[in-house]
Image (cartoon, rainbow, N blue to C red; front, side, top):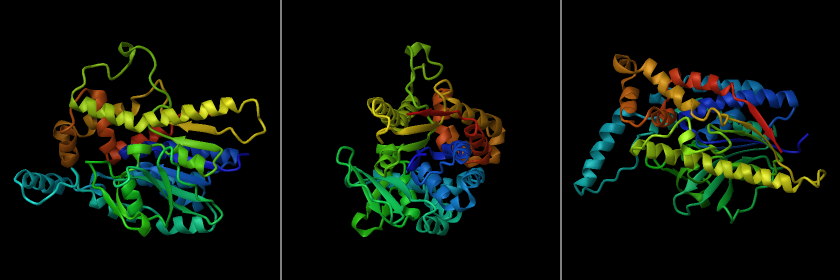
Amino acid sequence: MAERIGLVVAGAGARGAFEAGAMATLAERMAEDDTPPSILVGTSAGALNVVGLGGFLDLGLVEAADELVRQWGSLELDDVFEPVSSVVGNGLRYLGQLAGMPVRLPSLLDTERLRTTLLRLLPWDMLHENIAAGTIDAVAVTATSVATRGTVVFVEKHPSVKLPRYDASRNITYVETTLGVDHVLASAAVPALFRPVHVRYPKRWSGWYVDGGLLLNTPLKPAIDFGADLLGVVATHPRTWPTGLPSAQPIHTGKPDVFGAAALALRAMLADRMIEDLTAIERRNKRAHPYPKKPYRIGVTFAGPSPGRPGEIAALADRVFREEFACLRGANNPALWALARLIGGEAADRGDLLSFLFFDPAFTRQAADLGRTVDLVESG
């Protein structure tokens, strides 16, 4: 059995519901193999998921993952941001800025409601108790420092766990703290879309932070630095790049408009570094092949979309919106309808962008169900 097992959960916005379902499937495998994770590391929605899993872990691994699925199934758009103040308030700020008034536009969306939601839904007290009791060794969330342009990994850990040193090659700093809502909000503060977060503790690392996914959306390196030699990796993009000619691809073959370009940039930011890191692990494992008794190998169990189903989550978002909220049905959730109307592009790109903001049970429950169907791919 592996000496230390890590669970790495990528950033994903509303796709975090898919991740929760995939985590439930992975948790069942880990429970069968008696290999529960002791190191949990997440970014953005993944940060929310690992904090929740760490807090619910006293229920048991499988039950904790199932509870996360239930939490995602109750989440609505109003729990994340205020649509009216986002449009009206930020619109007025922008007009004032154009007029030369001393006002600034902090973000496109007013996400103050997310703070209240995370305080209500996440089991903060149990998280601290489970770490102190050694039920779990460490929980970590990543954020990007505005001042240093580096990744800061905020870690709450058991005293028996050694804090990794600064990683100069990737500009990754590990900071021990008691995790709180500001750390998770900072990890999920998508630049321009969500408001930057001023993290105050620990004081030496106080400052402004944005989404950890900007540099490290799937935080494999931190889990390895904590000594994990077996990783469970949960993501919403396939673990490999598309193969074959451009004209042979099933999606994203048309001329991209501004929304298509935004979707492409988002896919690159969220998936490419993960693929590079997984490829590097595979190369490392091949070099270690002649030395089977040496602790050089890192086993990986990947829980995410298969290469043959890359656009399944986007297609689900597009279909659910058309069935539940299009045309007159938009009266069921006018804020969501208005938000979706602002997103253009071909169906695959529109679904991609929409799936990150589709905070509604109509989508999140089906996304979680889809996540439960992932194939677990093992390597190493």
